[in-house]
Length: 144
Length: 475
Image 1 (tube, chains in turn yellow, cyan):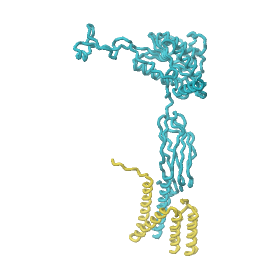
Image 2 (spheres, rainbow over the protein chains, first blue to last red; image 1 turned 30 degrees about the vertical axis):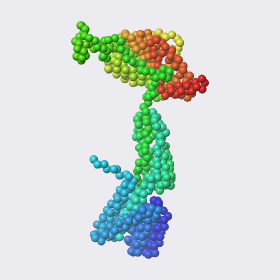
Image 3 (cartoon, chains in turn yellow, orange; image 1 turned 90 degrees about the vertical axis):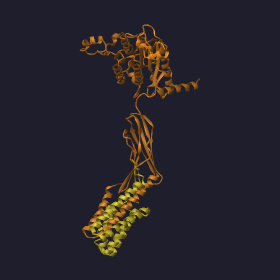
Image 4 (cartoon, rainbow over the protein chains, first blue to last red; image 1 turned 45 degrees about the horizontal axis):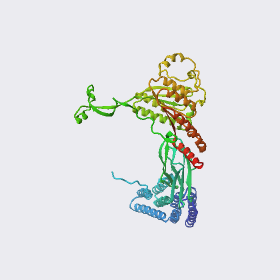
């Protein structure tokens, strides 16, 4: 489930490659192939970053295919046998996306970028605290 | 949850996408940051759920092969882990070995790979420090590529490490414990002691300071309170330090058992205000002779000497010869402290430059005792701590000690109860113990002599139980 590379992830990326090639031609295929290679060499998070980093150089349709592929890759990595974790991942991605969209709408790109990264850190820390509570690792505070 | 380097790499990657969004003026990249963040948080939650499942299904036991050992011994601990549900993450387990233990042989790391349902490891540990050593719970480490967590699981056992010293000291006769041989020693007459004896009316000649004013007020006539008079007793401890006294397990040799008794006698002598002396005898003869004295410093010096006493490593001397006691001239090589007596001080300058010509004294115990008692002017209570390896010499020593008109207590360490392999065949051990007991009774039957056995109580019980069993089987 937590392996860095699995067949289903490879399948998702191959489909993404084919879809990107279909909508963006050779450049789409190259972007999809690069994401596949990065995934194989460095793992899922780098493949997601590649999808977005290369995707913005393509036509909007190509970017959309690669973006959808990255989201599918998130789901494939976490796996369907842990629906709660999948749900948290989707909610977190949508929430961070909403933060980015709201701040982009209201302010400038730099502020939106900082806010999004900050929100990511806060959310990650919240997940860490949740783990401590779930495992009973938080020491009880006694009144002095 | 401790993040790994890869976790921070993903955070940096998400920040890089956000930075590119600013630099390239492509705000779409911020959604890439959001997707990457979603993946990261989803993995954290997934990890938390996996660890929660592990803690629910994992049971860990640390099992000690022994609950108590002697200091310096080894005791292995076996760590057994069982999973009711196979884990989806690799699990590493580390036993909670106390810092006081020294690892002699570290077992193979206990790692439960995904899908495994249990495993075990064994660590061989040495315990050099006495005390109760509690194990910490087992440290369970669960790790994936992004984060790891350390958990303390299970209870740790406690190992009791006992110091290497006689713990089951038995003093007695024929297996029966003997009450303390060092009792009170009232003079049997009224005098100026400390313990109140009786009240009597004042008589002319009594000093004013002897009047008991409370009794006088109560009885309406002057009264004197008399006290029990005490004597000062001269006590001589004779410690046999020859190589046969080294028999026994480390920390439980004949000498160490006898030392425990000697220390107790020294304490009682101090408590009763008696004058105490010490004579230690090695294969070459007298090694230490501290003449009787009653000061605190004197008793402390004797106590220190007793504590530092180690068995000699010289070869055993066949002292069981039936030859008559050799003349004192054979003890030329005995060590004498020039500070101890005037004669030694006088001859010391004359023999200082001579090459020592050591000659083994064939009767060091009896000859040394004769020399020591010759310097005493009052009757001496003599405590002789030795073993049964040289019966003839013990008899000779007892004869010399009784001649000093004092009481003699012989503390005998039976060899059969100290030899390591002697209890392998309990019937043979019992036969040997019976021979020892006959010898002890022979010594004990001498007038003014008390002969006691000094031995490990548990080994003595084993031998006596074997003897009882043999009697029941063959009445």
